Length: 90
Image 1 (cartoon, helix red, strand yellow):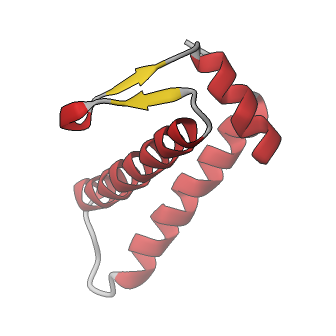
Image 2 (cartoon, helix red, strand yellow):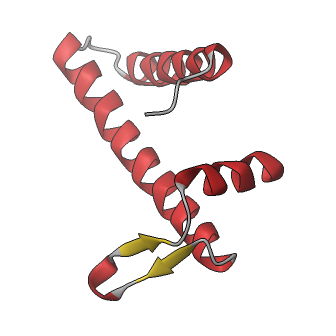
């Protein structure tokens, strides 16, 4: 598993904090910690799924990923090649 850089961890922390502020700000009558957690988890799930799909589509576009039947993907090279590609874009 790749090591998370400190900057990435800080960006993730800010992202989660922004979601926390968003959900709390919209609740005038109060909110439970479980509701906050549930909201943040559902947003993260959607965001992660969208990001993974975008990464796989980009990989397929440049030939690093083969799209198989039934929604399966096959990496032609290692994940590090895809990571390098994403670094050049970002």
